[in-house]
Structures are given as structure tokens and as C-alpha cells.
Length: 202
Length: 203
Image (cartoon, rainbow over all chains, first blue to last red):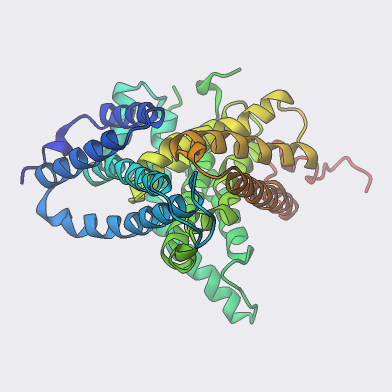
């Protein structure tokens, strides 16, 4: 429908998410979890564009996995449960359901924020409403705009290793190292470039 | 001392780039674990424990940035920024991630604050891995209702998380940063000064 959630000030939304998720961290109630998750889903259905619905599905897949695995964990290892494939009691089932819905409720809140916030708007709003120093606002924008370059850089590094015949496993530190070297170079070059173009540090 | 305006532009950009880089890594880690590993061990009730083996990766950004820049507040800011960037990239675990990212940064910062940002040797780096382990665990304890779980199970989780943090955040981070300093890209940072040669030196 209308995307009224995107029109709310990103900084206030950000603060609200942090405060709200911290508060419900300390309230343990099954019904609160269900209400929060339901509310988040309602907001997504009414306040997010149609085109984003595919992203919602992509988000919810890992969440559903984790939530189900939390349920199984609560079922087996909750108070009264008998370990792996042991006896399952009513109490441990209840623990499992509470844990699973709790995770769902947290995921719902985060989903609302992630779907309706543009990084550029958030940084702009942090600068305007939170009085973040200019340096930080522009530094963050720099890094966010570097994100596609980091991807290409990673591919370049992997290609370079392959050309030289170096075997790189998925957990190897070598590409990370070469990307870190680049990160340091970029930070120096970017700061020089920004200052030479007339950026002043307030 | 805590004045944000005293940071140099270069430090700010470096901190942002490190947080973006590690946000990318954390994002990939979380999603590969929850898609590939967790479903395999889910039937045994260990689905949620799979992430503990790589939990140290989440502390790496704050530790590395604090180790290189060596200024007050670096760890908290970089830790929090890593979380924010992950949320903006579209992590599904956003609302759990923001408070935990802040608390992890706080845990690293507390250790470096206790040493007054003077000492950066291996024991301090190992302690800096223990700090965020404790803070993130306490937060997750309250959030995940782990008081309802079997005590032995939760204790096992803590031990696994601690080992992972010591390995990734304590040892690997220090190795990486020391190698970076040896390569010579850190010459303008406190960490790299001992490798930069003065022309007046004899050797």
C-alpha cells in the first residue's frame, strides 16, 4: 500500500528500535512476543511497498530456520526436558514456544526498520537530528559507498591468488589481509581527496 | 579525551571502512551458518549453538580498530557501526543485532579503558576478547530466556563462545594487525611507528 513507514524520520525510528528492543529484552511474556510480531507484520503489510514483498520472504527464511531451531533447543534442553531425544514435557514445550516466538518478535521489529530505511537518509538524519560531527557523517557515507568496491576488490584478490597458484580456502585469512591493506590505503587517499576538495573538519 | 571532534578525518574513514568490511564478513558468516550449518544440527536441538563456534568473528572489528587507532571510544563506535551497517545491508537479525553490537563494543572498550589505552600486548588482547564475550553473553541470557534452559547446556555455550572469541578476536586479530604493521601500511598509526625506520638510525 502506501509506504508511510519510509516517511518517518530515520533517526527517531532508529532510536525507537533500540529502546524498544532493549525494553522487551527484560520482559518475558509469550503473549507480548506474539503481539509484537503481529504488529510488525501488520506494519509491513500496510506500510511497505509491494515491490519489497520479495525481500520480506528472503528475510524471513533464515529467521524461520533459526526460530524453529530455537524451538527444538527449548524442547530438548529446557527445564524438565531430558536432553537430546529425551523425554519432552509440557514445561519444556512451553519454553521452546516462548523462545521461538521471542526470536520472531525481534526479527519482526528489525525487518520493519531494514525495509523502510535508506542508508543515505539515515546518515543525513543522524547529522541533522543527532548532531553527529560532519566528519562522522561523511566518513560513514564514504564507507557505505565503498561497499560495491569491496566486493570487486575481494574478487580481484581471489583472482590474483588463483593466477599465482596460491590455494585459498573459504576460511583463509589471505583475502581478508589484502582487503585490509586496501582499506588502509583507501582511508588515507579518501581523506586526502576530501580535504583537497575543500572539506573542512568542524 | 572523549571528544569526538578530536578525531582526524583519516581515523574516521578508517573506522568506517573497517566496520563496513567486517559487517560484510559478519553478514556472510551469520547467513551461511543459519542456512547451511543450523539446519544440519537442528534436529538434535543444537541449531542455535552452531553460531557460537564463529562468535569471535563479531568482536573482530572493534578489537582490530581499537588496536590500530588506539584512541578512547574507537571500540564502542566501530562495534556499533558494524551493527548499523549490517542492518542497512539487510540483515534479518536487525533488532537483536543493534543492542548486541553496542554491548560487544562496550566490552572491548572496558578492557582497553582499564589499561588506560597504554598497553596493547597479547594478554590485554586476550582480555579484550573475554570482555565482549561476557557482555554479549549476559545480554543474550536475558534476551534468549536462557535461565529456562539446562545449566550445563548454557555453560557449554559459554565455553565454546569464549574459545572462539580468544581464537578469532584475541589471536587472529593481533596477528593480522602485526602483519599489516610489518607490511608498512600503518606508518601513521601508533602501532606502526616501531616498524618505521628513522633515517638517523644507525642500522
